[in-house]
Amino acid sequence: MPSVISISKLAKHYQVPEREAGLKAAAKGLFKRTYRNVKAVDGISFDIQPGEVVGFLGPNGAGKTTTLKMLSGLLHPTAGSVSVLGYEPAKRAHDYLRQITLVMGNRNQLSWDLPALDSFDLQRAVYGIPTDEFKRTRDEFIEILDVKDLVKKPVRNLSLGERMKMEIIGALLHKPKILFLDEPTLGLDVTMQKRIRTFIAEYNKRYGATVLLTSHYMADVEALCKRVIVIHHGQLLFDGDLAALVEKFSAFKTVGFNIDDPTQDFSSYGDVVSVDGSRVVMRVPKAKTSAVTSSLLNDLAVDDLTVEATPIEDVIESVFSVKKEAME
Image (tube, rainbow, N blue to C red; front, side, top):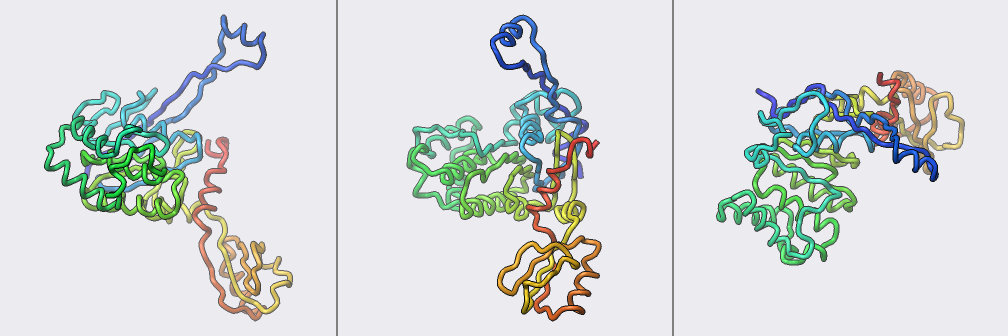
């Protein structure tokens, strides 16, 4: 099956002016500027198949948003090639733009002083959506996101979560085949995050859309994405199953047990993370987990012993801590 998104050695570099502080340096900069080459994206390659929901992860400044902007045609690459649905995004062909959408959690696309319904109607006109189809799709999305009582209010009177629901509806009214979602749940409470995740999963299921999702909330990634792509310092660090990411970058497992005397010294078994009543939680090197659990059961009168993988948040933190020199 041919890829719907194909990237090969994609790069985006910027020439950023810089100078020292002070009046003298400012005056000097008027005549002779110095520049620093910033490699926002530095030669990444990957392919995405139709219908995939892929998590696109990386710390702040890793190059995620820059990559999404190149995929949607807002930025021209410095080097490399990119193909989405067989189109070169930078050419911004009308047929291409009709099949994609870009949702950014920190950007507003709806008219601030108008009800969302008016902005939805503007989207209908922009994309030339037949009226009957538009109303059917609009009403379907309104029902799924449960915003029937909100669409007649001016957007400025909506809460952040309510506004984000409207932004997503407006961005999907033309039923795009490719969704580029950049932090769609940014700043939302747990309930709103879950509702939007459910909507994205339902849209993917109904229309077979391909989704490339960036998020700092690991709950979004765990709920929606079987595959994750991790970039760091503008370079590809990992591409594979979420479970494989945990296996590759998690050096420890968590061992928990109950014991009558939780104050005794357990340092010979591992690092104690927490003690809550009779419950002791330890961090144990992954390679020694079997030996440690056997020793605990043989040496101590422990109850309810559990072994768990490292929480995904901790794994991601360890991934993001990889230094550029180590990657190279």
